[in-house]
Length: 331
Image (cartoon, rainbow, N blue to C red; front, side, top):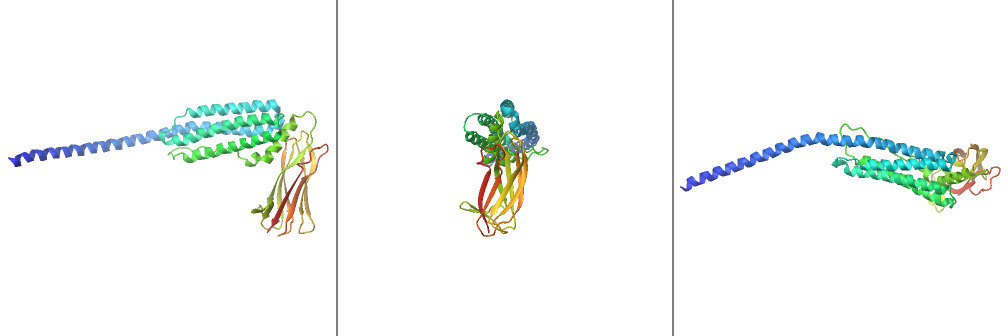
């Protein structure tokens, strides 16, 4: 009797184990089928998102090009022309941001998408900042305030460029996807430095003046070989036979200047008390030019002074920015 009662219990256990095994097999098959069916769907969603992003990137690149062109042409555009073009760039940047926020990325792309939206938002802010800064540059407030605003705008643009790079890096590879185009509003970082922007603002203000303004300036001086360190105010350069210079000069007045002498002098020099190199340049109102001088011969292991000067032009009343001096030593 006891043996007979055990046999039905064993049969029930076997049936339960068999049912459990069948259930697990069915679940595994369903998961595999679901995975295979979801993979193409996820790929298509990712590709659709990238296809939606690409035209927005192209439009943002065009806005950056418009901003660069506006800055290059600002001296000749005048207040009204600058306002109109900057207003268009600012409106387009805000519109692009709204469109970007309407995109629906695949869940795997959400973190990257947040970086893309950050890029568009920062660029919209930069366009608005540029608009206000140029209005101030053409106003009556101290020029230094406008220069500071423009420096801040340049840093904002650089932050947006970095955000876009992070966005591209955060995207997971999608088979069959075409790479997104690069996007950089501040390709020329040097043009957003304080000396360059101070020259730009001075040129803008001169262009708005009714009377003739004659004013030239030494904006930047770069030495080659480049400095490898500093000893107080003295730049330490590696030894070289010649000192090569790149000198950026500008016409920040509203009149063209012709055959203006640019002179660089090193004291002392290996050939005597000093060595001088000179070139001449023509400048249109608001124009910057880079002059290369490469024949200066300093004394090695001796503290030296480099003096770069653009000769004052007829009618110039502000000569404070016509000369730059720098101390260095080669060792």
